Amino acid sequence: MPEGTYLFPDGFLWGSATASHQVEGNNKNNNWYAWETQQGKIYQDQKAGLACDWWGGKWKDDFDRASATGQNAHRLSIEWSRIQPEQSRWDESALETYRSMLRGLIDRNMTPMVTLHHFTDPLWIMEKGGWENEEIVSLFETYIIKVVEALKEYVTLWVTINEPNVYTHGGYLGGEFPPGKNDLKAAFFVMRNMLKGHAAAYHAIKKIQPQARVGLAHHYRGFEPAKPNFAPDKWMASFLSRNFNDSFAIGAANGKFNFAMRKEYIPQAINTQDFIGLNYYTREYITFKPFATKSMFYQGKYDPKSPLSETGFIALEPKGFYQALKWCKAFNKPIIITENGVEDSKNMIRTRYLYEHLHQMWRAINYTWPIKGYFHWSLVDNFEWERGWSQRFGLWGLDVETQTRLHRPAVDAYADLCKTNGISSESVKKYAPEIFDLLFPE
Ligand code: IFM
Image (cartoon, rainbow, N blue to C red):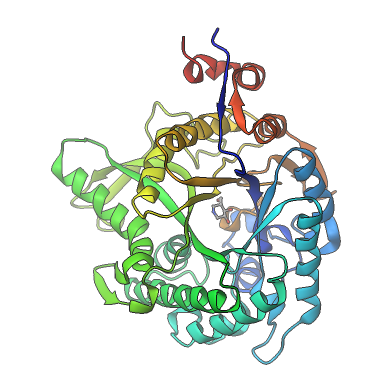
């Protein structure tokens, strides 16, 4: 049996990622809280509730666990509705709580990465039309300035907005996110205002902190033609990829925003990413369906040969991760994996998913692609939006009732990866023997 270690570069960031509404608990002043109180919006009408009780202080034990298992970084997000509960009121004590959390990371020798917008908006913002209303751009900028001034002592790595494409598709096309609309025109304006908001945030942060590294967390989903040589499938897959994957990222590169068959030139967005943040989970295969008006003329399916996650939400497609990294590389910027993971309460697939994806990342690094860090989604099970608590992405499990953390097998595999700064044959043999030959062939 071959023995060896696929090593990662020195100084590589190994962490996990979380988001305010999903872990803090008791967020009662944002659009998701309001959404959760409506019947039929969330799986079994579940609620974020206390979530992982970070606002009550449980972040300390979770950070202890992360640090003890070799993680040297953590990505968390700031809840706008806590910092600015009303347009005319700032909550300094909320900022102080975030300062404690960030100090907590620094004290544990962990690099903080801070996301400034992760799906949730204050209720007062939604009353003004949310991201449909261009006024949000300057309101967002004001919030950014307030937060960055308060946290700059601890943070230089910033994500302005998490997954603007998912936010827009969920809220304005699919309807599963608040405000539950299905309106192509509104979707265009939401994305376009998010791009303007991102650009304003980028420039504001760089003004306050010139050494900051600022980017976005892009959700990249692989779209492959179901029949690789059939032109309509190829065209549809590439159309979906251009709209879902490319539009925002290209807008933030050259200012040319092109989404939902509309275009706008946004010059202030040119070159507003110091790194490309990538959230990758899976890829799907697309069939063109000329008569499927309701599903936008296509059907997407997972490869029947790819193992599925517990609820079938994610297919194991590590080569799609490699493709996603290739997509990132084209922007000629450092790359940080801001999210990657799988829902799996029964530990059927997570360890394998982890190794296979990190092996693809290692391959890419060996082609000298500038990948600087990896944040696993997630540190601990947390509230999964419209899917409620039905999906468990944590390295650690969570008993929501008792707040007890559950040590999952992937914790040890990830700890070994972080501490070795590599994928060793020993660890694969120990934690995922079923894929040993795949990763270490003779
Ligand atoms: O939980 C989410 C996260 O908030 C954004 N990216 C995908 C994750 C898994 O669904």
